[in-house]
Each structure stands twice: as structure tokens, then as C-alpha cells.
Length: 324
Ligand code: C5P
Image (tube, rainbow, N blue to C red; front, side):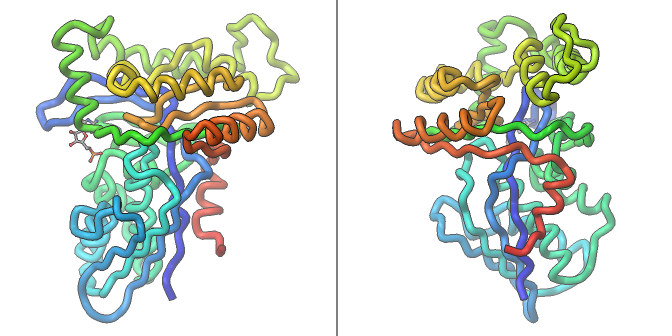
């Protein structure tokens, strides 16, 4: 019997890019948040050898370059086991959309394969394999609100945030993450960004601290007692001005993506931002109805958009293995 795993997406609430490092990566700071949109990954382990990837979406590679393949190979090696592994990916999430879909699929494979083989890996081995395969994998071993440090692979579980209504819109342009980082470096070298990357990276923890404490200390001057906590957090988020540095490079390269941000703002969103290097743009809304209306309105205009909610940690784990 294959093990079925729901592979959830993430968004980035703020992302600051630091200086390039000697290893070809950039230091960064981000707050990842899992959301309720997902792919489904089925993992089967039988007699024999080899790893097969099955996916109807032609944009998903079925060879050793697939993150699921790379994880499965490492899991078998770490467990010193041989098996014929079949990984079936049912795609709903956009490919290369900035929602971490490939990374999430890979972590779903890791967790599904452990179950299929009935051999759990030590937690540190899981984390090692995830970080080795990509910077955005380890967050999916935690779920909920996760602080991302280093190249994004160093993860710290944050206190769960209340669930927000949100809309994810994905304009049909493919943004390459390495190309976006390269463009960022070019802009820094030519002095096109306002401050140095190290200044920006330092401001991230300040903004995050300010945001998460805003509701308690009421720096907006408005008493939050009796307020809906999600609504209060949204207002404070706008006020602290958390940003995604990729907007500086991706919006000029793809003006249609900036346009989508403007459209979501006009639909009444409290906070709108690019996720990762895009092309997905997400918007946080105070209520379900406005979110649903915004998603419909963008879809009617030809921009694929879906209304959903952010997924706190307990729900992330509960729904991951829930039978369909
Ligand atoms: O780790 P991941 O496979 O997602 O990274 C893909 C590419 O994105 C890297 O090879 C690198 O060029 C770039 N990257 C970066 N800094 C990061 C994460 C990724 O420059 N923090």
C-alpha cells in the first residue's frame, strides 16, 4: 500500500537578502509560513531496486534532478536499505512559483518513504538530508511559522500565528531563483539598492520583533484588548514594513507581477508580497469573503488565483497524513 502525504506550500513573510557567500549562496533572513494549498505525494516501497518518479505535469522532471529522487536516494543510503521506490506526484501547486512546492514534495517523499519502509530516520539525519538537497526543504520538517536563517536551511520554530485568510496568485511567468539572486548582486554592485545587504539583513530581526510584539505592546497606540488577534497582527505587519528584497529585482524584470500585487491591494488586502523569488504573490485578508472575492476577481482577469488560509503547525502535521 502506498503512503499518501499531503505536501503543503509555503509563503515568505518578509525576506532579506544578505551578501553573497563563498559557497555560491546568499545569507538570508525570512519568516516562512505554511499554507493550506497542497500537492499530493504517494510513496511506495517494494522489492527490487531503483527510484521511479511519476507525474503528469511535463514541467516536473522524472529523473535524478527531481528533488524527490535526490531525497529518496539519500534516505535509502542513510537507512542502508535497498528497495524499488515509486513516487507519484499529483500536482496542484505551481512549478517554480516561489511556494516551495518542489522542496515540500521532497520532504513529503522523505516522510512517506520512512513510513513505507517502516524505518524512521534519526531527526538530525532527516534535517541533514533536507538541507543537503535544498535551502527550502528543512522548513517543511517543522511547518507553521518558521524562521529561516543561513541560506534559508537553518530553521527555528516560531510561536504559531493565528490562521490568516489569504489569496495566492501566480502570474504565468517563470522566475529563475539563481537569476533573481544574480540580478540582486548586480544591483548591489551598481549601487541601485538603497542600503547595503548587511544593513538590510540586520533590519529583519528588528522588523520581526516589532511585528510580533506589536499586539502585546500596542505601539500603534490603539488598544488591542478585545481585538481579533489576527486582525491586529495584520495591521502591525503593514506598519512594520516587512519586505521581500526579491521585489526590487523581480518587479522591474516582470512588470506583470507588480501589477498583480497592485490588483490584490485594490481588492482590500491588508498585506501583499511576492513569495520567495515569485512569480507567486500572496495577499493576507481580514476575512474569508473578501479573500474569496479577490481570488474570483483575479481569476476572471486571467490570473490564476486561489483563496486559502495559513496553516499553523498542529494543523500542518494533522492534515499531512490524513486519509483522503
Ligand atoms: O538551495 P537551492 O537549491 O534552493 O538553491 C538554488 C540556487 O539559488 C543556488 O544554487 C543559488 O544559486 C541560489 N541561492 C542563493 N542563496 C540562497 C539560496 C539559493 O544564492 N540563500
